[in-house]
Amino acid sequence: MAWTIAVVPSGKRGELDAVLKDDVVSRQSQKVRDAVALGGPADATYVLIEGSPDAVRRAEELLGKLGEKLPAADAEALYRRFKDEEEAASAGMGLFFTEG
Image (tube, rainbow, N blue to C red; front, top):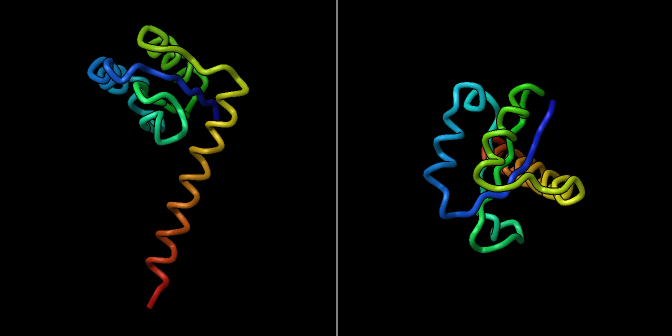
């Protein structure tokens, strides 16, 4: 699965919401986090889009008008943090449903 991570200024949240509702982009996996929560700048938002290569290219095109795509090395490290967060949440839910 293809993916991309962009950093968008927090002040452009309204425009970001419109991009995420795009007909193609809205059908992909989306994760939006305040950058500061993941060690980034306080005035920015990280956006992870995962899906088909064509849809990810569309997301990059639209997000590029609001912010910038992270460099590959930074994006890889941040992608791992997104995945670790997702796995930790899944493990927590498993414990919730198995406790008894």
